[in-house]
Image 1 (cartoon, rainbow, N blue to C red):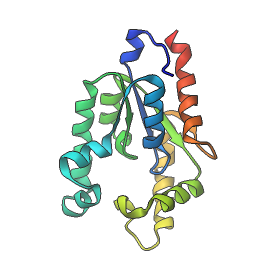
Image 2 (tube, helix red, strand yellow; image 1 turned 60 degrees about the vertical axis):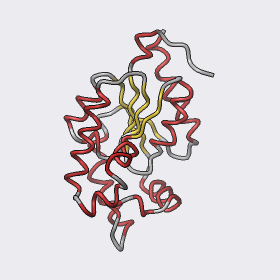
Image 3 (cartoon, rainbow, N blue to C red; image 1 turned 30 degrees about the vertical axis):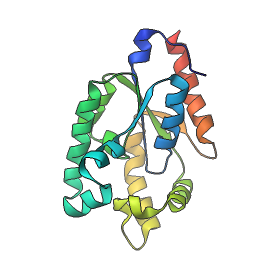
Length: 180
């Protein structure tokens, strides 16, 4: 079921960014299948090397985690033919944008805050160290409002009320005209 691509286009990476809970990893796996590319998740890569993200935040702090994100971005800059799901803040660092964007097309998955809250509650908050507060919904809305304008510089994909398969298909369809 893969899409036919020229060898030049095939080597470019597809990068997914967006707020936590926007569906980057879920959509990324499906998109990689459609495009016959390898899927990688930057948070999973960090966890394989440094351990669980909540533990990194607790023992080393957010600054250390952001440095690990930069190191992963440097590694991925040299790779091709990937679908990359990034951590929610990774591409808010301009160095990471330059590293990953040099050989890839960036899409931002967006959703309204109420759907983000619903998704995060469904999957559990324990994996989200930035939400370690008593009033997590208020904290989430605060972080969301800080980031939403920053995400607007990327090509937007609205995920509201849509299945991961529909979202992956839309991204794939957006790529087709460029690949002919």
